[in-house]
Image 1: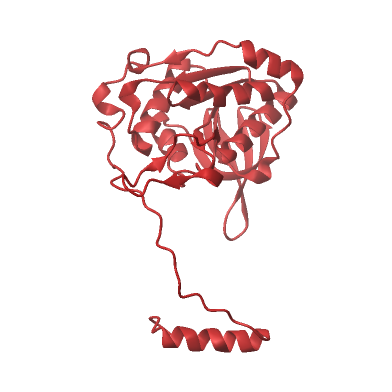
Image 2: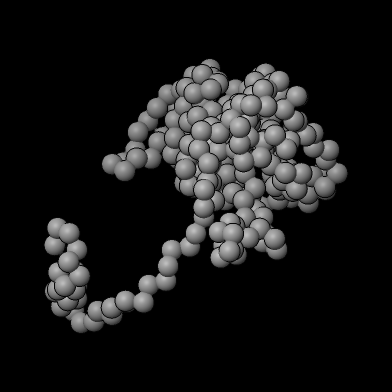
Length: 262
């Protein structure tokens, strides 16, 4: 069984700043980490590997320094890693990203399960997983909190706003997982030594057989025009007293502010 875990290297949100002149993210001097939600996907893959036997490959698209994110997964017990890196990939929106990642999975050829975190903390779109499933023509389910192996497929528990759902998916399949799937494990010394020496292949547009016009900025249907911080609010109101008194004060404040519907 072959499992591919898609991860993303993102800026640590504790240190994110926006340049007031260019209105873009300041990346210089900001630490990069593995998207925290993707770490739960790594743990889900390793749990399947521990219980049923599997080969796990970590996959990411990014600049050369994204290999550090891949090494982080190798330190946890992931078997292989592949970096998708090419100047042509720059400026990718979720669709162009999904196109590139899907091409890499097709190139691997023997994938039974693709796992992703529910979303990335820098974009929060939760679109790449489902888009990849559509491009690969894989059955998929999102917000998975539990995975059980079946003969030729999977039984999964999906979290919803109303409760939970139980689904059965055949192989190959794609899933996005949530933190309830299990806390990421601690890396072992043996895996850390192996990760340090591992050679991570980098695939570009030519390796994937993609048209440069279908990836990166050229292949994106959306573009980020500007990033900005919301203005600081100075009209804070402190409400005190019992719950009933606070509710009354809040209602009066909303009426005074002429909030629609109040």
